[in-house]
Length: 285
Image (cartoon, rainbow, N blue to C red; front, side, top):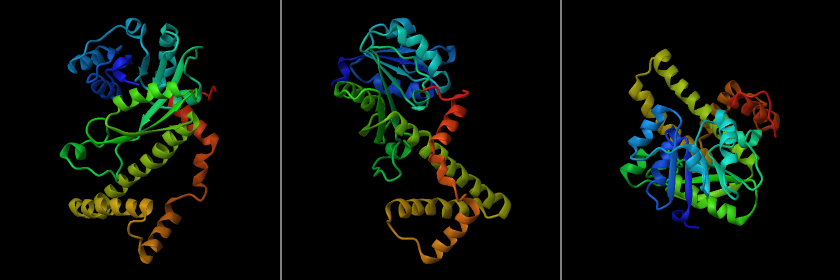
């Protein structure tokens, strides 16, 4: 499937992800329409050198409609957009929460795909300044993407993957999972756990500097280097932790980590997390 042969509409092109997606799509030969509701967002779209199109016109003949809008409004936006689509169109969302919660407006003859960027790996071999600077992905540093599709038809995946590889470029690979599996990955694995730990690391650094009084340059030097070593050792077994380190790690686990922490992977906890994220009373699937 050649993305240059497609007609694509980007809804929310002036948002954070919308701008990233639009920047990559504008380099293709595809027919792409960019829509944005807010005046400020429209100015951001124009600043990219792109023209703002009314939603009805943008989606009328679109093969793929990318809903690059916040999760909390995906239900409302899809209710407005989906009835206007031609049969066989693909609705592509960027996060799985709304699909998992059953908030997307459903219509026969429309395919629904969700694709989330994995972001450049901490283990990615970077060779240029541009790759080092691109921590988020979608500019210079290669990244993977993980996607889910409601139907298992190969043609839908083929079409969607062509768009996914373009809008998140450069992409190494696209991994296909179920909607629920994608929801377990995001938010549970990467937000509830990994991002939370990242924030905890920041708090620990500030405590070391502001409360204990260690000079910030010394604290950052030792901390940043050891974070790399800790992740490489734990995730890849590069250089096993010393016996003394294991003792300190065990002490830390006893003090910080709850014994039942793995219940975060229970379906009930996932449902609770997503209802809070989407500000809804209950999952509707």
